[in-house]
Length: 67
Image (cartoon, rainbow, N blue to C red; front, side, top):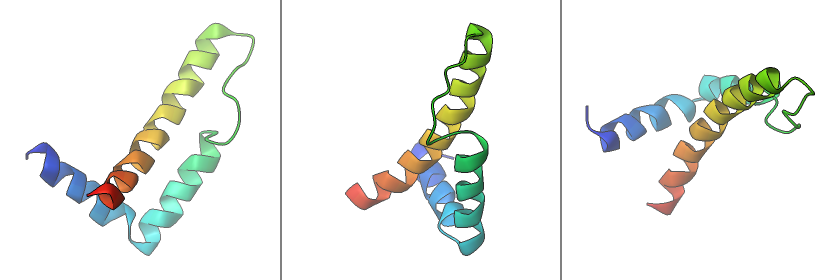
């Protein structure tokens, strides 16, 4: 599967009603709208990794609007 087809697969999934619900849950669950910093640097890195996955999913949807 080429990158363009893969992006389309993400979009097709995430733009459904269930996909929107799941993405909102991931945003809440993995702290998209709050700081990932905690005094333990390992935990901060872990939280930031979780948050980065949600940011990637959202960016996939935003890329569609640019095309």
